[in-house]
Length: 256
Length: 256
Image 1: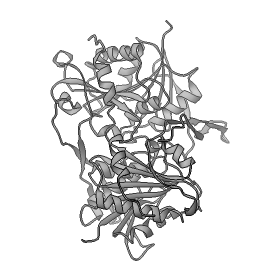
Image 2: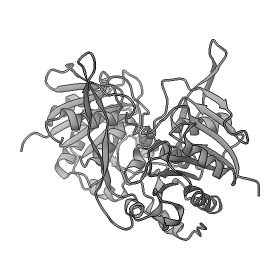
Image 3: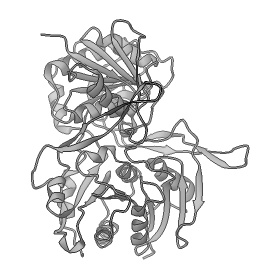
């Protein structure tokens, strides 16, 4: 079998240590192409760039692979790579390793996961990887072995139509990780705390800050598993339809 | 019963005709507060502003209500309104009316729907409204009666935990609209066509363009219903877990 063509993207930017770790792991599995944002794009969700021109620059941090940066979002990276850079459709898209958790509701805000979700929309197997450490000098050394076996399974087994994987790593040395657990997304919400300040012209401005509040502790959730030392996989789908709600609304009386 | 407190947001910006139509309709149903972006934010998905300060400005286009604009994304608008502007938690969040469709996969890229989804994350009933006409002078005259009856039903019946509504309008006079149809999200994908140009310094740049390719024509989908003259409601959920995939992955062999 030919080596699979693997597209690597992220949302922390081309120079982040997390993407370097992911690139090095993918080089053992396939032919690697990289397209990453030229600046941090955390929290960009599934944003695309409509009103600004996009630019692509070839770079050469790692001479063994083909690498580009662009001025767009993580989803722009996937679209540009697929339609302007890659020799043909990739066999796999991997995103990350994100500096910071994308468990629970964070999947919706995450640029890392948006890139993987874009892969699923395009019909390409895709995985987002995240480590629960926001710092730039986070220690990714426990991740590669898990990334390798999860990715090998995706290459071998494929993924259902419209589904990608959201993989999160606890901050633990490899020997303390209890294993891999397939989970559902826990019910959680970000509690906003806007930091209100006065600028030199006496005008108010606000910094968005906050913390994640987990509203459940069930053992089949990603948040529980991460707190208990597991690497988590949440299969994540692009169909947002709430099928259970359809019959409820069909009982409503509309008066037009 | 006291009048419900209704937050109106959008992604086309505070001056768009669509939000004016939605505000005028909501004034018949409750006490209206507005927080909208100061510039168009289409395609921003669920982006939030982490690395830039946010600013809020009180404005007064409509003297009967309390209106603000901010320099953030649609999701920032919801967060800022809820935590810095409203007297208490709103009873309802409505977003739109978007100039352009948010049916099928567009729900994932849409700033309009991201604002409604943010409402669902916060536990507040929320609806995103969109008209299938991108033009700035789109004719919204068929929308208000439908918006009113859908919104009254949401106020009366509530919505399940973690679910909001994605409502789309075909471009038809009211008398030609066949009714309201509750649907699932059709399987579709945006086909990218990057418009490649040379700048005056001989550097390439790209404009993202494309068209929606609908991959199915089932009568229970939003795209079919819109093409056949219905207003569509897709109940849309914040839990992205693909439950059917969990058991599949549990059969994989991980080697760590």
